[in-house]
Length: 191
Image 1 (tube, rainbow, N blue to C red):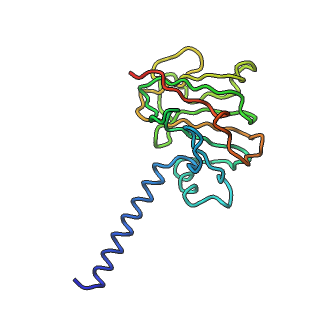
Image 2: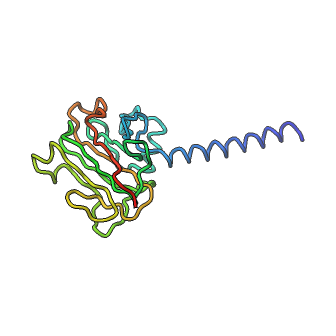
Image 3: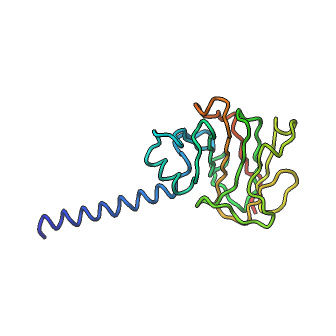
């Protein structure tokens, strides 16, 4: 085989393999997965001129209208505190306290970044629904069956992601929340 043909075949194969790897990386990526804090992943370059090409690609694919860090910080979890993948057949207790932000929301998504249909029509829990006493120490249960208290239905999903959005962070979005400030995700039981 001629050397130009080997180079052409190698070049085409390299582009195809590299392109497939890049697409797979972006589709598997979570919003700003640069910093791990316990089970939560985050990044600080959303909505800035300094956003990396990876962050821009993930936001374009999964994070429509991502706000800059000064307006919202995004934390995504795909595992529990013990590092096990989040599974819709299991029941999880998510506990947290007051976050250094004006308000927050916790939302349940499938791995592709879509809301998971469920009979109850509940997709998110937010701090605005909490009373003053409850806001200092809150609990949300994620489970397939209805639970007492704050409940996010898993809708029979397999793997899932949780996204915590903290709006108007107290530090202007300059730093990450600490592991102690972020909610704990504890798996209690599986079906």
